[in-house]
Image (cartoon, rainbow, N blue to C red):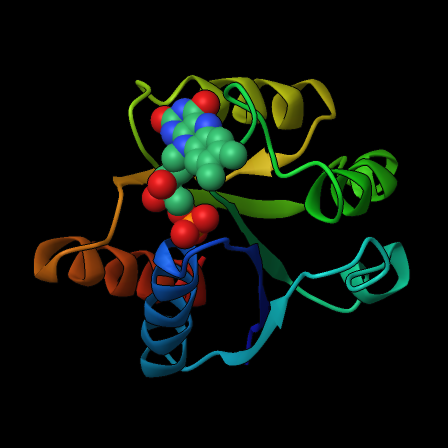
Length: 145
Ligand SMILES: Cc1cc2nc3c(=O)[nH]c(=O)nc-3n(C[C@H](O)[C@H](O)[C@H](O)COP(=O)(O)O)c2cc1C
């Protein structure tokens, strides 16, 4: 059975809803799933990262097309050296932009030689029914990856 972590930061609940749907899909797909809400830089350590087959990282677009800077960014920076060869997926909600934060994030992961599931699942503001279904589908795909 594949062991998956869904590790996210969310300010108003939009990325959190994505995370919960991804986790639901992954469980339906037969994976063992842990969901981690990152509220501090130490909430998901490199040691924890090592315990999973696949990790889905989620963070909404904050700042100016950036990851959230107080908790998620330092948490992710601390993992960056451990990304090489690891299976990860990215997701998150955005607002008025065009998804640049996700393109930058995916490039950063590729530069660190992570094995990215795709270029990241993005949803504008609150996921509607179709968006939630897309998140469940991603979770199912990750379970059999
Ligand atoms: C401080 C702040 C900065 C933001 N910066 C951007 C941005 O650069 N580009 C963008 O598309 N949306 C931006 N947004 C909008 C959020 O990404 C959007 O509302 C998203 O749905 C929030 O998801 P969350 O509830 O998971 O945090 C920003 C929101 C806040 C509060």
